[in-house]
Structures are given as structure tokens and as C-alpha cells.
Amino acid sequence: MVALKSCLWMTSISPVVSKLSEMVILDRFSKFFVTSDHQYGFKEYLRCRDAIYTVRQVTERYISNGSTVNMCILDLSKALIVQIITPCLLN
Image (cartoon, rainbow, N blue to C red; front, side, top):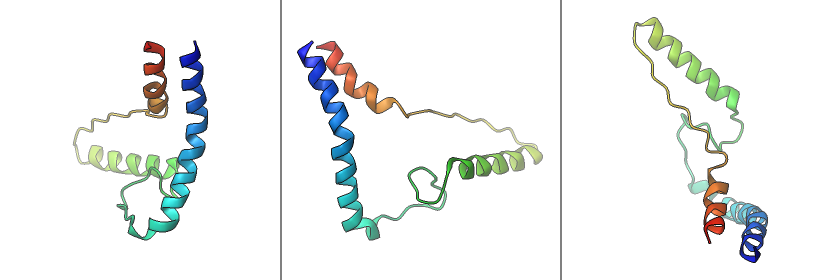
């Protein structure tokens, strides 16, 4: 049980350290980070609704031209937590 408590403590302190590191890296190297205009995640001033609008427009265009549209949507919001906690529970 002690190992599980230490792992959970690390998961609570980890976001703080991560956010501080991110701020330092972005402050020093942001001019070198170039992203595509087609990227929506983790981009300032672009929200989920913008991505949904784009997907809908593209889908409607392909369907109106007689094409089939196949989509796969993954929710990875909890993937990191599972990777951190699972090894602690297996010990």
C-alpha cells in the first residue's frame, strides 16, 4: 500500500512540474515550434468547435461528391493516467 500512495503522490505533483517545464520551454524556444494550419489540438485560439466545423465541412463535401467517409475518433484524455497508475497497481 505504501508503493501505491507514493505513486499517487507523484501523479499529483507531476502536472505541476510538467506545467512549469512547459512554460520554461515555450518561453525560450517558442519561435522554433511551427505547426500545420491543419492541427487543432494544443493550439492557441483554436477550439474543439473549430475542429468539429472543419470535419463536418470536409465530410459533407466528400458525401455530396458521392464518396464514402470513414472516421475513427479516439479519446486519449485519460491515457496518461492509466500508464502511470497501472505499474503501481501491478507491484
